[in-house]
Image 1 (cartoon, one colour):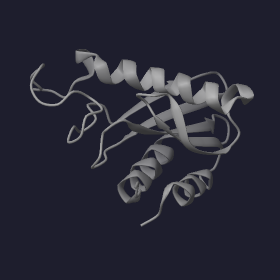
Image 2 (spheres, rainbow, N blue to C red):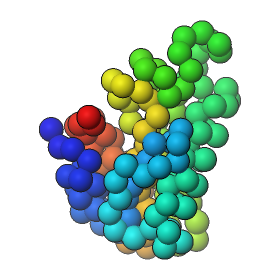
Image 3 (tube, rainbow, N blue to C red):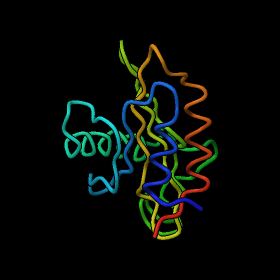
Amino acid sequence: MPGIDESLQEIMRQPGARGAALVDWISGLSLGAVGEAPGKDREAAAAEVAEVARLSSEHRVFAPAGAEGGDGPAPGEPGQEPPVEDVIVTTASAYHVVRFVPTAFDGSVCLHLWLDRAEGNLAMARIRLAEVVDRLVLG
């Protein structure tokens, strides 16, 4: 079972990958990063990815079908599955895929992949991120 560094390196083998980071979306801190960072600043990129993750996880419009609001732990608390699987942001030149990582200790971690639009395959990147997240060992 791979850890953070091995998982990030595996993601970077995806065609078109420009950079990847594991981000705590509650604090906005990067837990690990590899490759380039959008805007050249890894800390700022992690904070901005965290903001997108927080916004998508906190709004009921993105809640799973049939989910009851207000019951159970809040997003980011132990035992809480992320309400969103992933978020995709497209620009003229890139795809940004943010995949939420379910964890035993809390649900506040996401994996961000910055993918070149001309060289990358969005569908394959989503599949690869899901596989990496399933095997990722945090702790």
